[in-house]
Each structure stands twice: as structure tokens, then as C-alpha cells.
Image 1 (tube, rainbow, N blue to C red):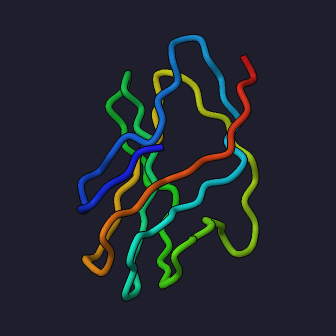
Image 2: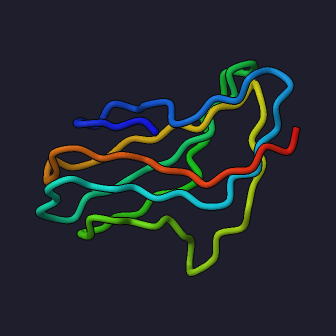
Length: 105
């Protein structure tokens, strides 16, 4: 799981060609968070050069479970798409994305 210390958009996961993954949930763990800090998730289509924002949320908690209005359905991710994230704000020392996923093929 990648860890960041600034707002640089970072690849969280990129499937290999031919792989299909089911993403079940995603969390962000902050180290020394002192205020509200936002996290944005993106799907980047490497073949078609399309970057899609699909989640934004903020938290003041050390452990931030991503959800959308209390629901988070599994979604599939396959090459040539990759999952990216960035952390917005300066009230933390580092942030680490963790994902629970199952490889379908």
C-alpha cells in the first residue's frame, strides 16, 4: 500500500494486463492528523488518457473508511485502468491507502 506525505496524485494500484480485480473497500490511515484532511480517488484510463474522479471525502480521524452515503458497492478494476489518490491538506505527517480486493482473473 502506498504512503504519501504531500498532495501528489499517486498510483494506489495498477492491475497487470489480463487481470481483473474486485475492490471491496478502501481506507486511509493518517499519521499525526491534527485537522480535517481530504482524500480524492481517481480511476485513470491509461489507454484513452481519461482521468475520472469518483470519490472525495474528508476526515479528522486516524482511520478513514471511504464510503458514499453509507454505501460502498464492490467495483471491478482491470488493465489499462489504475486507481490513484491524493491527500488534500497539510494537517498530517503521512497517509497510507489500504484496499481489500479479490482477484477475479
